[in-house]
Amino acid sequence: MKLIDLNPDGGIGANSMYLRLGDFHLLIDAGLNPKKSGRQAAPDFRPLQGVQLDLVLLTHCHLDHLGAMPLALRDQPHPPVVMALPSHKLAPRMLHNSASVMEREREEHGTPDYPLYTHEEVDRVAKRFYGHPFGQPRKFTGAHDEIEFTLHSGGHIPGAAGIEIVHKRRRIFITGDVLFAAQRTLPGANFPHHHIDVLITETTRGLNGRALGRGRAEEAIRLVDTINATLRRGGSVLIPVFALGRMQELLAVLHDARKFNRLDDAPIFASGLGLEICHLFDDISRKTNLIHFTRQILKDLKVKTVPRDLVPGKEPPGQGIYVISSGMMVENTPSYALAPGLVRDEKHSICFVGYCDPDTPGGQLLATRPGEEFLFEAVDIRTRIRAPVTRFDLSGHADREELLEYAAMITPHTVVVTHGDASSREWFKERLPSRLPHHSKVLDPAPLQVYPV
Ligand SMILES: [Zn+2]
Ligand SMILES: [Zn+2]
Image (cartoon, rainbow, N blue to C red; front, top):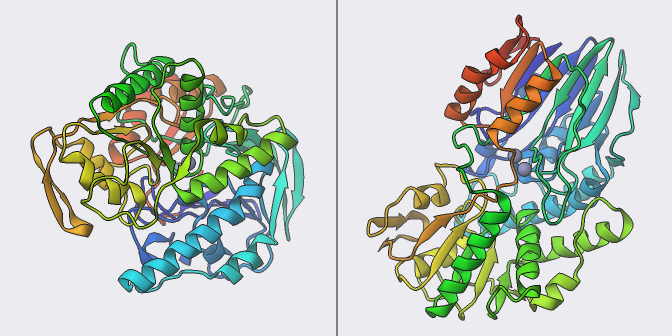
């Protein structure tokens, strides 16, 4: 097998990987880097020039995996894009939203290259998307060779899949983004337990282990306590979330707390795309038993749409709980617009509940100490941090120890570490060898280089 990581910057960004298995040409994911804009945010597809892909497989619909799919398909008129059934419902919605955001950014900020694709192109490529059920092996014959693939539910968000591939007698497994623990809205990953030859694993949380006594249930209670304390002192709470997955999970957690009278009464606001996804989740819930989310949660909590035109630096439009995107508080998003008005007053709270890249405004804010100054560069607001900024360990990614356990169980001869920043990958590279069979190798592929595996 040959492998090329097409993510030009490495780490978590424009996730995309090309695999050549004999004469079978396979692409896994084609994402956009949330920290970059314009063409810079896309994978580097140059190694695919002159290659006719046989098949594209999608692990899940977060934009760091899906956002560049129309670009990947532009020079590849043939291959279908196969994904889990929930992803098949979500993918067109996510891509249309991405096209709208790019159009708006071009109008408002003159971002060159934008939009990278149009709504029309999204409609066209969506016709090549196919949903496939979990756990069912499927033979796929390409132009010159064939493989068998199976999707295994990955727990991370609805539709998230680990992908098992068999070529000749070799077994390859790609974790995609994975969470082994069950969430309120979704069961944990259901990954194969048998021997795998090559494991391609995510490493998002390599940098941080889970602190003792900080299990998911305890963290949810600590979050609700923080919300109540903030509301009681007259403040508002900002919970930055990804619109797909984290938002619905958080709303379900708040719904439980309210049901058992543990959450004080206050208006709850959510952002537009996340609310649309709530309705898609409701639909998937009705038709499958893959997730547990109904729109009744929105009704019971009386969730309102956050105003689109939040003015950065102003007080929030009313006291409340703001469950809004983006999760890493990147520029030009509702959470980024609301944060400057909140952090300068100690009565408010900002609660991070998912992974935050250290280079994003969310990651930088978490690294800033109370009383220090913080610059919201994109809106040119410098302010002292007075409100408590807290991290809650409710991430959608597996703990690093769990990923090690999993790798040890399936006894791979090669582990490829991806989807984690350099220090996270380093943690895995140090620890994996003692957990693997004797001759196993760990590979940390440099971007755009060809590796025989
Ligand atoms: Zn993801
Ligand atoms: Zn990801």
